[in-house]
Structures are given as C-alpha cells and as structure tokens.
Length: 202
Image (cartoon, rainbow, N blue to C red; front, side, top):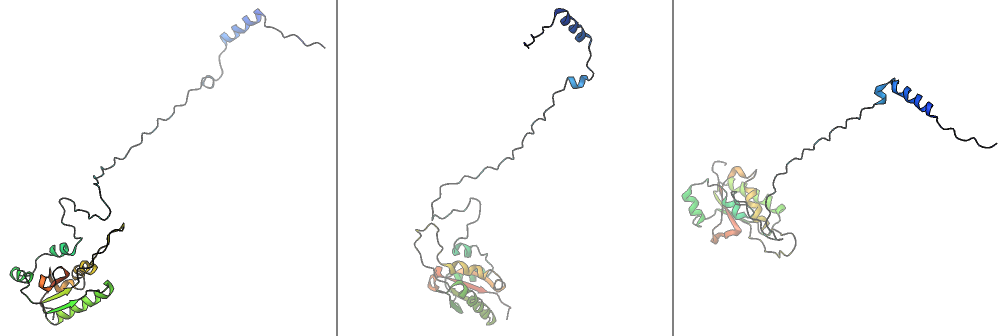
C-alpha cells in the first residue's frame, strides 16, 4: 500500500483558526504568564578593618632587642633589675653601702651552684641572718661565663646573677629584704649584691 501524501491546510481552514484564536481567552492567565522570580540581592560582606602593623626593623639572630620608646628599660640584665629597685633605706647609709664603706656582716657564695641548689641555700642564709639580727649581708653569684653565641638561639650567661634578685623580691624572702644593690668592686662588683635586711623580725 503506497504511503499517504501529507495533507496541507487549506486557506479557509487557516482563516477559521485565526478567528477562533482572536476571541479565545485563557482559563488560567497567571499560569500562562509566569512572573520571573526575584533573585535576592547578594548580601554585602562587611570586611573587618585590620589594625596597622607596627614597623619591624631589620633584626639579626643573636642581636639584643632594644626597648620601645617611652617604656622603662627592659630588665634583661641583673644590673637593670637591681637599679630599678626603689630606694627604701636611709639615703646616706645607702651611699656608704654603694661606696663599699659598710662591711657585710655575713656572706654566702652561690658561685658554681645550679638554680635548684642555690635557691634553698639562699633562703636558709637570709632567714638565718634575720634570726641573728644582721642588717647587711653579701650574696656572691659570679658574673657567669661568656659563651659562644654562634648558635641560632642566644643563651643567657650568669643565670644565678639574673635569678637571685628575683628570689629576693619574691615570697618568702621579700618581707625581710629592705634594699638590694650591686656590690662595690672590693666586695665582688657585678658578681655580687648587697642585701640590706629589715629590723624587727627576731
């Protein structure tokens, strides 16, 4: 059976269809004309302002950091820590002590000890001097050995020299200590310190 030929729309049929379309109304106009969905506006991200970074100068390994301007001297050395100790004793007597005109009533040599060994020895010495009603004692720490600082991390020499002033300013020794000062050169200089004790603890 030969295939059927396609049927073409006749002019009168096309004219009739156009009339139907002209008077026809959609049943659901809202469905026929969908409104585009409104996309939410992207929320603007609030960028938290970053504080300005301080200027960092060049710094070499092993170099000593300088204190900031307007701040007190960094007590990285025992000399600075002792100098920052406020004057509590009589000024005239303090001057005599600094010039080496006062003789220590007792002395102890911590040189060569470790921190673990020196701390209890120093406490016994100070408490014993207080019990004996002594006023001026001498604590010898030594200046410490200067070591090679060629490594990446600088090492502090004179550990006892740094630590003894902190022990004297801490409990249980602090209530008994009136004044700390670097010793005169004839009593050891920077490798020793005077400790002037308070009265009235016997």
